[in-house]
Length: 290
Image (cartoon, rainbow, N blue to C red; front, side):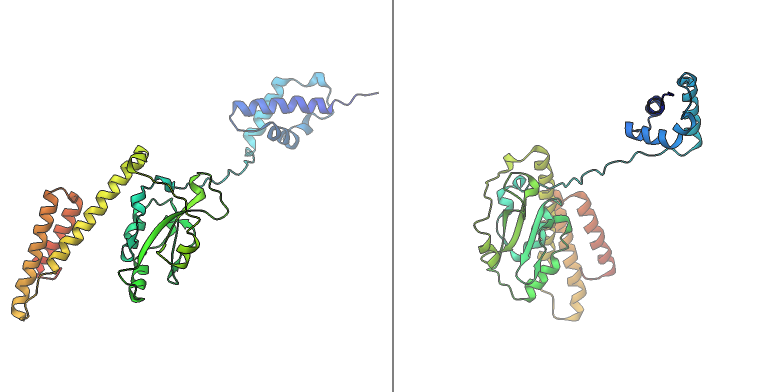
């Protein structure tokens, strides 16, 4: 009875294919080599006597087929999507203090883009729990609050809560920061859910502390610039038309002096100083308003 050596022949061929794929760095698995052998090589040797199959000749045939046909790419398992979340417990407690509602945009902009957040202010806005980077400019929200008649007694609070469908397990993606009105229904509803932990600047990792320091400096530059412009605008303008142009020129000159003082004290950066000086000097030449 004639023996069937098909399985043995297939095994020899597949091993040669697998070995050559490694040499060529094709990234094939053993299963990929078997599939390729079945589709491209086995039919050439099926039924032949074992003694007629020379591995050196097989390697030449494999190489010629590979060179003549497109190299198949092994199927890669999809990599799990990795979600990066900023740890809310790397925010100093003092950065989560209550603020006036008109400071909402400035405070939220200060947080890391990968921080999970929810901004919910009555019927005006509710972002749901999203990355901070997905929250649109909140200046419009502030203006809506202004039109709605919110008073200076209305403060916004920040609290750390466990994210929906998550556990209080210490992982950054398991939490989010809620920004809402103090004493609002949402504030009351979540009062027992807040995760309390006192964090100081000394508790922060060195890299995060450095990033925070840079942000603090930038924010202070903006505040100082606003104050400088506000002081100039607080000057009383003359009622007579003929004196108005001179008053406007004096106003610009005063603003320039304020900027120079801030820069001399190193309270604003060189770039911010130069940009504002350029703008003011152009208006000074035109005799325009700030």
